[in-house]
Image: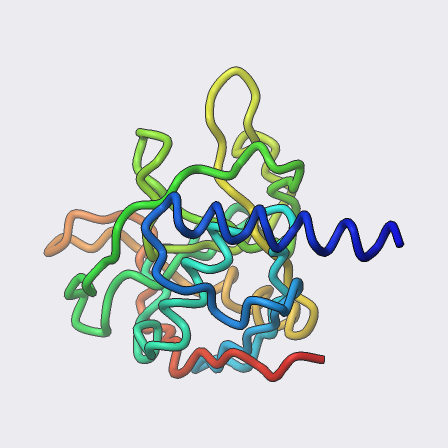
Length: 198
């Protein structure tokens, strides 16, 4: 009975959330913990997303996944013992199109611990759209406190060793782009796929 009530409340919250923030349709709406396979040039990572605690962020991420928008993008920023960031640029460093920015769900109780996936944003709180990052350390400085944090919305369940290898690649300042921490050899996100519900 409690489970049925919880499920009904969750579906109502999801429905209101998606309508409120301009989402036309939830992706795989009955799957509370959807899994996404990320095939990269360094190996495969599978993440499990948390729709209970980050419904808006999860649906935003899945929208980019199912439309193929993450395919053939790069991980453009890697800082060892900090983050591996990608999803926003192709291999020529051309910015990919973005959907609307989403509300910041960093207060959901999920922490920026090692192995989690979170949304990148600008300095303003509600500016996340398509770029995401993996935490390769317990980054407590990215959690909310007296200011907004970075919204965690899932965690790696397979391929931790791939992320560890990514975090150790050589990077440098890219003079043409004016960016720090750019991998010298591109790491490509070849394909992102929403897996069938378990």
